[in-house]
Length: 466
Image 1: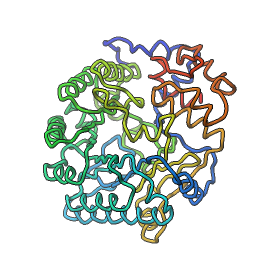
Image 2: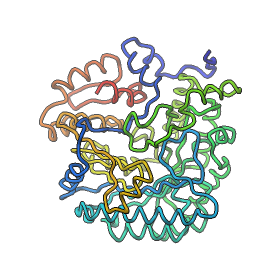
Image 3: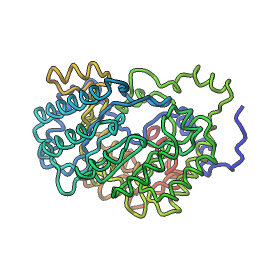
Image 4: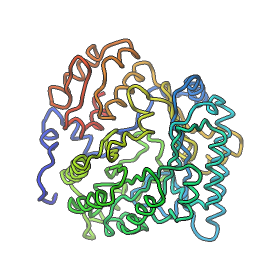
């Protein structure tokens, strides 16, 4: 039986109980991931077709978003579905060096196959993982210098580096600043030590606070953390304390993510590993409950979300795109803006195990099996495992979905200029009329805007109705 929610119903709850929204309730109850995932609809697309599409789009391109994935971790969290490679013990440095070797070699293969990449201006370069902050300083230097020397970095390019809060040593912070990195991201997930321990995290809440303060003192202009809600044994009060710590430390940006227990592979996110995470296994979850643990109810999860979104907005944070918050008008997230804003939607190139790359015509996913990945790179092949294409209708739908995910109004003039038809014509007229009737969007001559309930449910709307 569900525990009684003592903190009040979330505001969106009435919309979720509306019989007309039963499909939205079903979607959020199943708990898939997909607010920023836009897979193609043309199966059997060849990897070379994607690379050709990318090459065509990069001629005269606006800034692209460039990723470098280093998939190494010292441990694996109990919710993690990413294809990570564990490195610890006596051979850790050797393994870390090998992954930098493979990443650089893969990047060289991309440049050979798509030479337009070398001249495409890089809007933002993100080194993510895994835990790239595990890399020794010399390997961080080797990796960043390679990309800066071989891709289209400009004075406007921003560089972001991700890591575990316990691994950003003062020496590594100094190296990153020296190499032009201005943004740091860290998967804090929670400031509650009990919750962290149940997640399998090997850092404490105090380590997270120390990371933020050290990064601020070192002069990083953007310090971002990830917070998760819906975690094992997490309460609404625990999330309220997380918010208090964020505001107390004036953290630049916060990415709020719900726990997802459905396989990422089902939504083609590009980050699904070969084995399910422990928490994805029903028997494992049930055993935890039998041992006295609890999973937050759906009401509680939406109340946690509400605590974070309302609290951050009240403190002056801007949400753009959904669940990405930046302080004092510093948003939107630059890399997300390049990808999803209605007037941009530029290419994304992800180099490294499990990366997801896309252009307007198609998308591709790098192999998630590390042995297959390494073999492809060693053989001189771009290690993309699969690709799908977008037909003309899917390209248009993808653009609308992306625009909605920014929480900004979808503009009629921009849509008509690109796709030659109005948002007030079929099929959009009928889709948006239904959403408007249920109070999820408003429609006028200028376009379409989400209501407050629509913003909360935008992921479900995107994936069930559009």
